[in-house]
Image (cartoon, rainbow, N blue to C red; front, side, top):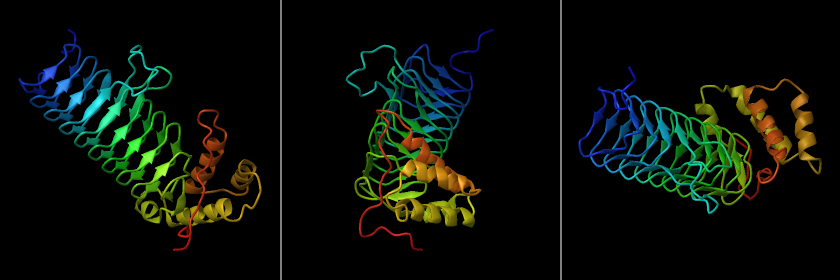
Length: 285
């Protein structure tokens, strides 16, 4: 016998609107006036609150919480989008989407828009089509990510921050309020202003259970080498030689491999590495 589209143990309010093609898993909660559109999957114990809309071709995993006014899986905001193929939004587990978040499905010229697990997206944050977001990120109110951008794990975007399309943000990057980026940002850095890193995200590194004090020391050493001591040497060649120079730990290896991968990107992803600028730039504890 085929599995029912709405599991008997799901709680779907009589005033909710659920498309006949949608699948609602056991323990899911669909509140009054919520809308679940065609070809959507709502995973176990995921809650879609009043007036939230899951538009179409969207999958949510387990234990997600979608607050009122959020719109997930809407059409990509891309003038080239003509309606077909429809594209997908795929969301993993334990994410919180606060009021009026907007996360768009993919366009046909890229992978599905993907969101990992354990993220917290505050009110009015936005992720465009084909964006890739890893795990345990925080987007504060009004944070915006342009299409095709890639966001690593543990990234924190403060209020009103913006990431340009086709850019890549490394693991553990912290954005100060209102910061804007149109270049690739290496892991564990703090972004301030426009296209500027100013220091290492020491607090984020200390809170990361996968890192140890030696990792922080290595990143500090590498940031000094890359940003302050490199002189006029070619960045790709210098980073490659530095990677081969010793056995780096987890964070150091991640940092150098990110730079090499970012510099090898082809158009339209060839955005360059975000520089360190400003009188407040520091590597001191």
